Image 1 (cartoon, rainbow, N blue to C red):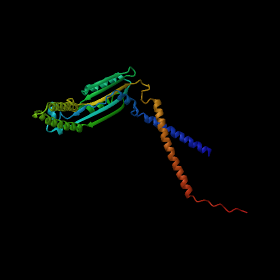
Image 2 (tube, helix red, strand yellow; image 1 turned 30 degrees about the vertical axis):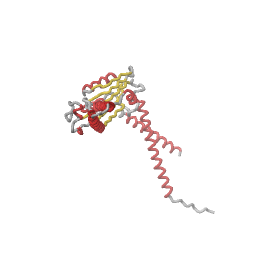
Image 3 (tube, rainbow, N blue to C red; image 1 turned 90 degrees about the vertical axis):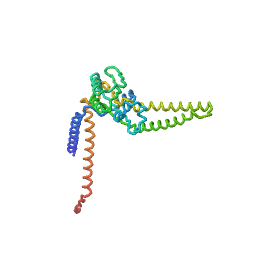
Image 4 (cartoon, one colour; image 1 turned 30 degrees about the horizontal axis):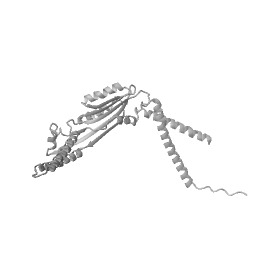
Length: 295
């Protein structure tokens, strides 16, 4: 019986060792780990998170028109406003080369750097860029930037702001009608000086509200229709604490964890099958009657 259990232990150990080898070989197909939070938290620290709005004024032939003319169009419903932002964070041991690669990609796709922040000293430098790019070049630029360094995190957000634009337009139309009605009170005969002053003050208040709306319209219908791309490039030393690449010791540890999980699952399955077999056999086996005692 003792010899039997030794064989079981040997078979269990060898199966675990085989799974460990498979786990190590499997990790060779994963040159970089899944995205973590250390780059993203640093990115949010320096990013304003503001969207750059895009619109379809160029497509409907209104890109070169003045804003008041655009807002007074009868087919205002054709105007669409939207925004899109991509956030990419990457680590690199070749900081200068990869930073140059980022700038080359921006030049190739005619992108504009909106803000730039350089921080840290070698070997712990960080470059953070907020970039404006035309909607036509957005996907190609993001695809190019994903290839720079070791990509740690990437996200793309898109919002349709056409509803916001139409609410502002409705508010503008209401204020214009209100202004026209108040302006008619200027010529009211026999109006007191106090009433005239109140009318003028009301007109000024409405005009200020219209100016405030014009600023918001300018943000939504800016002449430069852009999407925004935010990039953070962080330098690390090979083998340092920020190096998330899969070194051989890391591959061994990763393979061990993977093998242990699968070995326990397989052992549990075998134990359940054995227990089921023993239980069924116990239930179906008839008891053997003992022979009569001899005198």
